[in-house]
Image 1 (spheres, protein in one colour):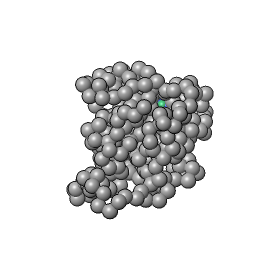
Image 2 (image 1 turned 120 degrees about the horizontal axis):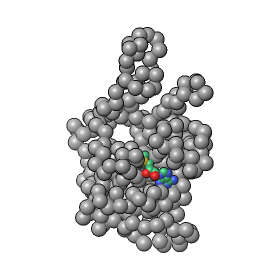
Image 3 (image 1 turned 180 degrees about the horizontal axis):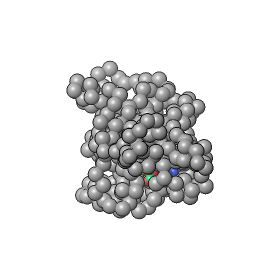
Length: 285
Ligand SMILES: C[S@@+](CC[C@H](N)C(=O)[O-])C[C@H]1O[C@@H](n2cnc3c(N)ncnc32)[C@H](O)[C@@H]1O
């Protein structure tokens, strides 16, 4: 079965619907280990420690490697976390753990983007805003107000025919290049218009996948988001004339994505994950 836009309700640790070497670009934001809004989620997967949470994500990263075409790119948006355990303060550098995981899988790590979120307020001792003794040295902490957009490539550079018309048609401007290929991006956080579930999923603003899709894919490429949430990357891909497949474990998101996409949702195939291995002709290639 082929469709230009697909949402698979299922687990991206096994993306049976996708053939090896079939995806040109991955743009995603997983649940962040040791960030409290995701604790229950990881607990449901029997992952309680930092290591177990990353082991859980690693299964998806292995699949990402399998499905990417040679030269395909994976962009992973993740933030670090802090937590006090047994009275001891810890920094959990999620971004470096994900880099290690991709390196171990044999992908090439490219320079990453630091996404500065202008809305975050400085915090004191990892809790509220600076108050009273928060202005006195030396006991305040630096605020975690950056997220990382890690960028990996599977193998060598992707190859194209000389003057490939789709590649040339997907060109960016000098202004776009200067802004997008610099290391710090200041992009305002997503507006939470859908209430409860969308807020809880910590959606990224559409500008993030929009830039990444323009930077690292060409028209009609296949883009994958293995942690789809409310469908931000799907919306960006549709607007940019790329094909798309997303995986989301929670069925409730089908409704949110449909509402968000309005009439455009008629172009999206929603399907439940197959329980048996597909025959290869049914795989997206
Ligand atoms: C940080 S949210 C993604 C937010 C998304 N970028 C957006 O803009 O809405 C991560 C999502 O991944 C989903 N998820 C977590 N593990 C998954 C898995 N193994 N397979 C598929 N989806 C998963 C969660 O239910 C959650 O909706």
